[in-house]
Length: 183
Image (tube, rainbow, N blue to C red; front, side, top):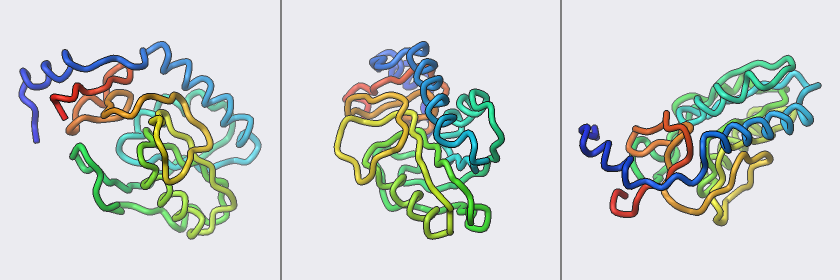
């Protein structure tokens, strides 16, 4: 569903900024320090979970000053909707994962279903080790936990820094909570 300009502007005007651009940049710096401590000597394979983690990976990777390789995995539960459904696999790089130290990078830990299944898939595909990093984790129970978390926020529908609302707002410079009336 495409939003017209007035719908887009209305959603933006009603949203609440939960985490500023400056706070997000600080969180990315902290994540990079932790990743470097844990994986800096392992020549890891960084797996970007498409599509939301493109921005997270793009902002995080230049902060990592050690040898690494990048690939992607595409598994989605939302597909433009505001609630998750069944996990749809679009790309699973099984052969590239075997015997690698893998860092799964995702944008958000909501229920933890996607991250849990992606991490399980990496183990099934023979990864030497698997760690996970998420930019945002909601303060709620999760099916699995991330090893590295940028920021924790309240359990609301969010957008910004890769998180989307109906395929829009991934480029917002902060983390915003969508107004209840827009969900």
